[in-house]
Length: 355
Ligand SMILES: [Zn+2]
Ligand SMILES: [Zn+2]
Image (cartoon, rainbow, N blue to C red):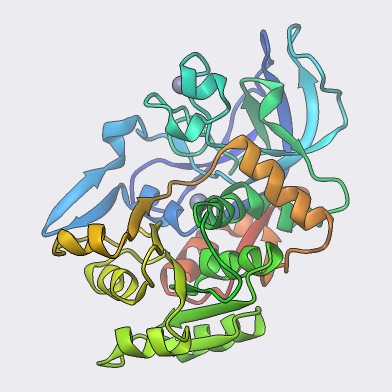
């Protein structure tokens, strides 16, 4: 099998040839055809996440030590199955759910692997999908995506399920509510698409970039707000006609948190997804007397991936702008992403001649 690996953090990925693994027990070997390139791969490539205030979280501390293969938006064809892998056949095309837990704890047994404390995430802790082949520990992590474009299907494994899980935490919306999406990059557009698909009529896109706001409008946002406005909280409340029932924050910095929490109606909920960083300073009593909620959302679970795939199958989910490029261009693609030259998502093609 051919993999594109981090040999040294921050340096170009190396094309490495290894023996193709054989699946044992309940394992399934998937031949990758498409592999999405996620913005968070840039942090794994660099070797750390910035926690603000000069603090860093190093990926080596959670097991990501070079040589390492990234890639957590896998799509492919089942090539071989272990002797104990049931309900799966060679030749089936599947999305691979990457947010895999230990498989033994109560959370994993309830298919809430993303709440497991010993995760084995594909492309983050375990070898990922920047590779022609991938070993998946159990067939339950394979999701049928028949009828969905393969590149789009790949992106549902991270950006799609992340957007869906965040939106599903807005449990108390009423008909006249608006929902704000802060940060209109790839996951932001996916969040707008999901909110529209589940019936939210008024989505307010918030960003500092006019181009991204224009993309958000095309994507189904009813209204937009340039969050650099000095009175952004009052403006957001005005756009929502005083009924901002929810906020999904894909940025996650002090300024966006203050905007989101400040603009919510009573009883509204702010969902924090973005990992930009920093610290929260907020008076405590308003959480109680405004009955507002703050909840974090980290990727999503298997049930949520199946649900977002079902929306895509019913053609309810608008497809984000996608470019499918040969896997051999992975280093150029990562540099394009770093330089913010990518709109939407780039997906690696492992079937092209130049893999
Ligand atoms: Zn991702
Ligand atoms: Zn577990």
